[in-house]
Length: 86
Image 1 (cartoon, rainbow, N blue to C red):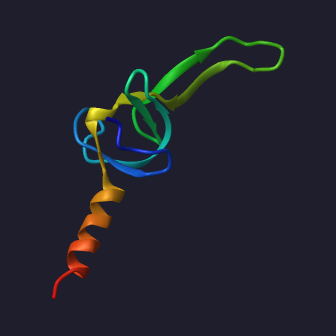
Image 2: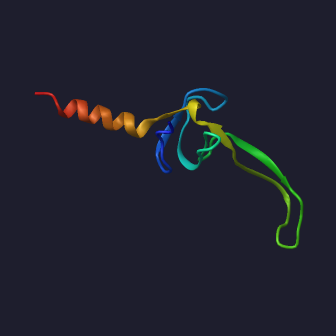
Image 3: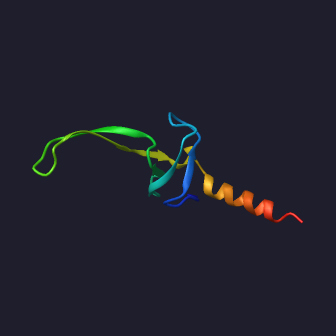
C-alpha cells in the first residue's frame, strides 16, 4: 500500500506546496501520512518552561501519502529502460 520509505525523494503533486521536492523524514503507516523535509511548514506556539524558552517555532507537518509521488523509483525505472535496449 505505502510504497515509500524513509529517506527517499518525493515530489508533491497537490496542495499548497505543489511541484516541490523533498526527503521523507517520518512515516505514519496507520494514518497513511508522511512528513517531508521543508514541506507543509506550520507555526507552533510553545509555552515557556524551565528547559524551554518558549515562543513560535516553525516545523514540518504530516501530508497524506496520496499527495506525493516517488521520484527515486521513477528515476530507477528510466535507467533500466534505457539500459535494456538492444
